[in-house]
Length: 215
Image 1: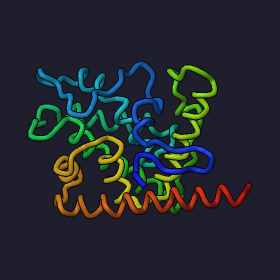
Image 2: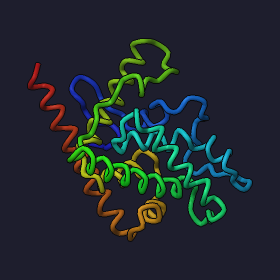
Image 3: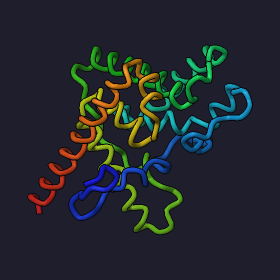
């Protein structure tokens, strides 16, 4: 059974179909496709326009509630503003932004744990993931259900494995890009990705079985 498509009760979750339409900050352009880097030097405005949705979306996937996602995104782009002159295009902008985002999200959760005790992943709010481009209300509802289920599965995953899974399976970064973003050995990336895929599948199957049992 592939990661891209697994049974989820009465529906099937296609992971990559949810990548580009999970909501995002108002006014931000859709992020660039994997591998589509700028051909001219980046400016802060061009990077924001290209990747604001990418940052917002992956903050949400990493468990940041929608009420805090804008603040996390702002922190990320404050770092971008300070360090853009240091950015060396030995890696992709998406990998560089992922590294910043991971650090900001980890700091967010350290603050969250300090103030509120152990981390609790928030539920996904339907309004934050509606696909405004869906052709019919039925399609829109199916999309919301699929994204909600994806986020629920991600919220159950080990944090380290989830980071690698999101960057590889959902954002399609290469193993070297992920290793650079997470500051780890490429072999460690491959190991975590293998275990993350297995964990993702186990959670999907467990949730599907639980769903059948409640009918």
